[in-house]
Length: 275
Image (cartoon, rainbow, N blue to C red; front, side, top):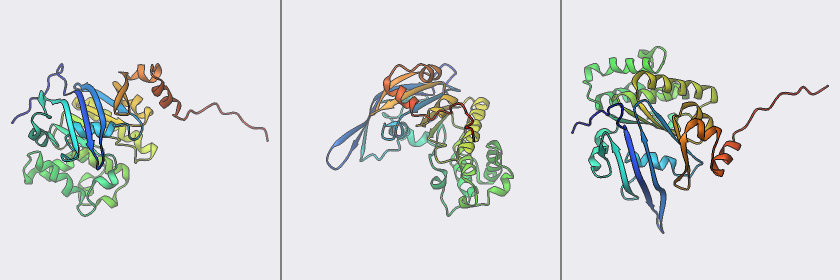
């Protein structure tokens, strides 16, 4: 099956009334309760909330990465006009190709027993490139994510690279299949603040260059404000506030959003204390 590339006016991703119920030993928990949103070409939509709010479960539900025997999904998740909740096989065909995931922790997302090159070329071959062209394509991707001496880095193992470099490798892997949508699940939360800025800048640069859409998952309002076109604030599995990024951050309507903003440390003015 060939998935159509959305036109500029057609959403890359359209989620309608998504519900995710998780089956536990003694009860059923509704982790995501009827959320709806869409992402167009070149747009970044951010879902923000505290731990346990349901934001990552929403992302994993969109990608169909939740265990089938433990998660019951309903609603609609359309990618390129194809409803992944109706055609369950479609999700397996688009993952790593039309839609890619950038995981949360680069230190654990990569296998420690395989070189960076082997893991990256594996993603490249999955995307349809022949073995003979995979290494050259891997070098191109590492160059695209601004990793110095890319050919040399391919032969290294994850423990030989810094966290920031590993996150760039994960972005390169995500780009291997020429996706139109990236799902970024807290892609900078495990990184130093100064490294975070470089990764976010890279993602915005790639988006500007390719027109890729981004679903950003974060608990950090600073990150959300920097990268987002629209923000959905999530609490207890529901969106409690949604809107343009500037409006949500600068003039929030909901008390919960105001409390999230109040939790962000603010630097006051410096006053010299007399000796």
